[in-house]
Length: 484
Image (tube, rainbow, N blue to C red; front, side, top):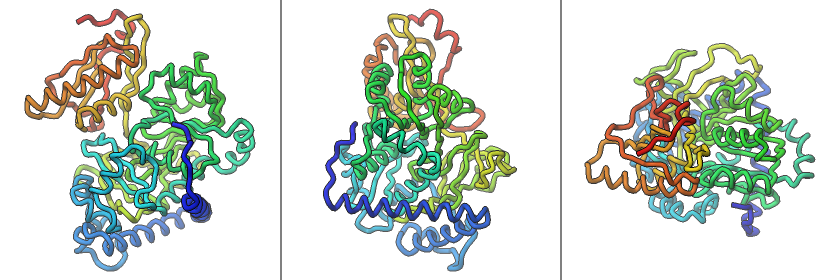
């Protein structure tokens, strides 16, 4: 997916305005953070209450939900918790622009030609994959987009980035994103938005659905100086780089969309010989926190309120894993996200981070699905990304609570939430057929896809559902293949 979009004069003017808004927001972020923790806390408190007042005035849903709150500024813990199902059930009452409605947005995102384009000429829309069991649709206004762009610039370290800019331009300035590119997901929608509004940027998207050798060959031909992708994808590409099959020389790396496991970041940086910026975000808030050299994530606490809580929504003590986390996105007003149950488990660092960053530090128990290694008929091991597999099942079977188990070197089993037998087999046939087609494209026509009688099982430690799991001894992958 190359950057070939033609921009109209109005879009060019809008892009210029957005650019200056981002610069203004960038200066505001640096000024606030340079003033210290007290300044950040004060700004967050002020923005939280301003968003709360705006939501009560403009959103019928929030007007009802917060009807019992006092008119004064409040402590966030006085505000009721909101869940995704409750918001999606009343989408038209949730949004603050009466021109937006679920029917119109659904029609807009049904057309994949609209990825990254402006809905109603002023909003960017994306959807979540539904990994928590409930898909969502999210509308971003200009203020939110400018904030996300500015936070990205901060995370990439503008001083170091400025010093590298001439090198990047001299080498073509090409940027590459390796992600799920075929639908209105946050990563590709936001990427396409930047590409379409910045025609001077040479940017291209590469699909994780393609076989790894094809991705490697295309990256070798493209030679990006900026490479972005999911941590699991970057880890596979790092292995290809070290093996000599991938031969690129990027100057910057970016990872997001999954949990970066300990040690993976350093291995990726070693393979490519350049720094990696790791970002924690969600469809509800594109930029929540960013990584540091100590392996922690620092919350963008001037624009995000993140509250680790237990199952009953009481605060989780510092240093302990939370059951979930409540998110308040203080940048987006068209679709207010206030004390929203995000579903992730986090650990808040009780003491200051050794990296010196005063922003609150956390660790996240996000997506920790397994990368699968499956044996092809010729004996080769083929690596499969979990996000590619889950996307296949979600789109084919229209389900969002399932589990893919690797039980042998050439066997996958599917588990689904309890449904009627007829529906269960219909869902399985749709998912299995799509998986077989995908596996054949990956040189794995021999892999058996079966239906497991059990329901998906949550992880014992985190209590969360892992969608792709190796349910076998990994060493057995290297032995004789399973026969059936």
